[in-house]
Length: 267
Image (cartoon, rainbow, N blue to C red; front, side, top):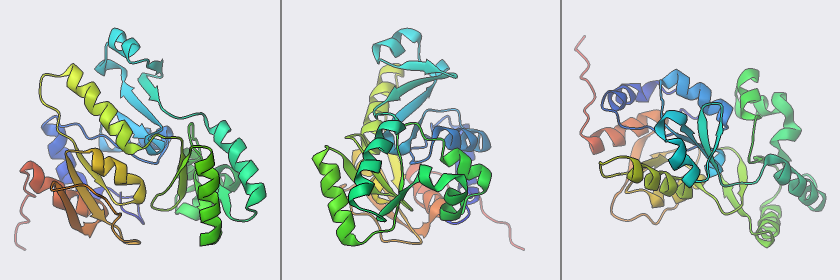
C-alpha cells in the first residue's frame, strides 16, 4: 500500500498475474480483520491473511478440512478457521492503562483516540478509521514521549515478557508472537495440504516486518518514503527496492518470479 494514499495501483498488474497463476498472496499486516477483509475484496484475494502483527491467522474455511483444523486447534467463525497467538485487546488495554500512570503523556492508545482521532493520526477516512479501530488482539500506540520515556516503556514491557516493535506509523506491543512466527506456521500448514514444495517470499518496509523477512526463503525490503530500511540479518536471498510502496513491491517481486511488466506502447 502507498504510504500516503494507501493505493495498490502500482502493484495491480503483478497482482493480476499472481492470481492467474494461482500463487497465494497473503497479507501479513498490522491491520485488523475488518480492514483486511475490505482490502481482500478490493484486490480479489481469497487466500489466508495475518492480522495485527502476527496476532492471528484467518484461513478460508474451504482450504482446510474440519479434521485438519481440529488437529491444529483452530476455531471457526464467519467462514474462517482462526489461529490466535495473542491475548484479547481488553488484556492489553488493562496493562497499558497501568503503564500510562507511570509514563503520563508518553503515548495514546488507539481506543483513547476514538475513530476521529485515528482518522487524524493516519490520514484514513472516518469509515476506514472505524475499521482500523475494530481490533481483536492488540492496541497500537501513538508515541508522544521522549526517547527516555520509550526506553522506560520497553523495560516495563520486557518485565512482562512483552516485545515492543515500531511499525510504519505506530508503536506495537506483542507477547512473543510476530509476523515471522505466523509465516512459519502458515508455511508448515501449506506443506501439509499440497503436494508442491512451499517457497515463501516476504516483502516489507518497517521494523515490524523484520522477523517475517528473516523467516522467509526470499526477502524483499521495500524502500519507505519516511524512514531508513529496517535492519535485517537475512542472508543471501535478500534484495532492496529502489522505489517505494507498491511500485517497489512490483519492481522486486516481478523479476524474482520471472514476470515482466507489459511494455507501454509508444505515444
